[in-house]
Length: 260
Image (cartoon, rainbow, N blue to C red; front, top):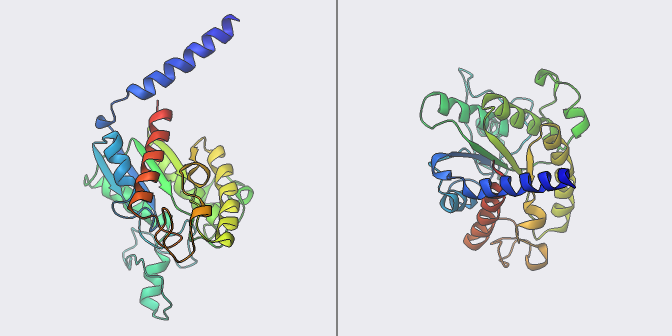
């Protein structure tokens, strides 16, 4: 009985501390795709919690997975990054698109912090996966402790690399991973559920918290239509302003309630 009382007291104390944290002294970073780029849900997270800074390296059309020719951000001949998605045979544009992956985004994020353009993050949120098609398996991605042994051309491998790199580079930073949201397309939702299963295993391995936007943020396929405007999605995939606010407030709540 005494142990139970002490445990409940500790839980209450941690919850109270989480609610009393002054986020105005903390710095926020994030990465993602077209649902995260610019001032969308992350804007409302920063406004809701009052973070001191907002460092967002998300780019539209981005993926977790690398390509066989994905460059490093530090390469002398680094071509740049493109958010293009329409069909093209232009080799320069294809290289730019193949650099639009989590690995390059995170290398860019770290580089910008090292230059002093942004402070080190206290909280970092990943929100991507919608565009990935080559999933791989969490078991393969976690099969070695050495990142050099991991296949980064799968979603699982790319996610493992990005999550591990952020947690190793900024060991005091609290990292969260958002699941993809529901869309107005059943096939995409079915695939997203498989992706979420992979992300859960990788996050568990690194003791990183999942934020379940798919099941809990309030955006449901029941009220959305693919390629048309629904309740919160303007085209069955991308949140409108109200959807961005809904996501932002949900993610802010999860951060507030779980940051110690």
